[in-house]
Image (cartoon, rainbow, N blue to C red):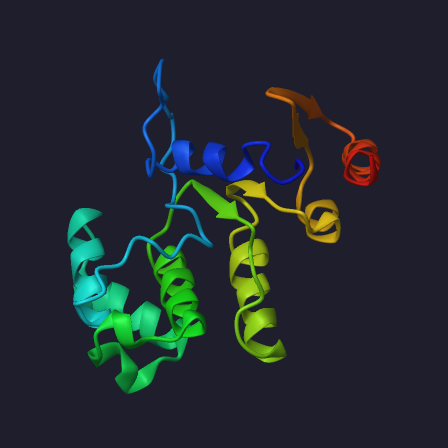
Length: 182
């Protein structure tokens, strides 16, 4: 957690390999997703199917299995055959979310998870991410204190270039709320 401009999204992008550190290095002992909520990873001139094929190949997964999982989850139907540049922001988010869940990771990086689709689809997202993968690790950057309180057991609060870890989520949320009003 942290106010705007404190580095939450930058940290998630660094951990997800979207950005390179200006110094030092990042090493992981587990597989991590790309940042869920980050829609910049698609090639707009390619169809949804071609983007799925590309990512399945990069991650060494079977294309047909990944495509089936994305298709079942994202509910994009024939739109998967269209170039991604023609997708609405909601369709891109569904594709990104579906791909993030179709390829299993040890740790899911979540950058400001936004509500995608109608209430039924939002429940589906919550279930797939936080219940079906409850045994996985999550690193989540969010202003949604309810989401943090219901899904996290530790918090990292970033403020003024410094970070502090809290084992007590409620304490972290209270300090964060105080910082937001300061």
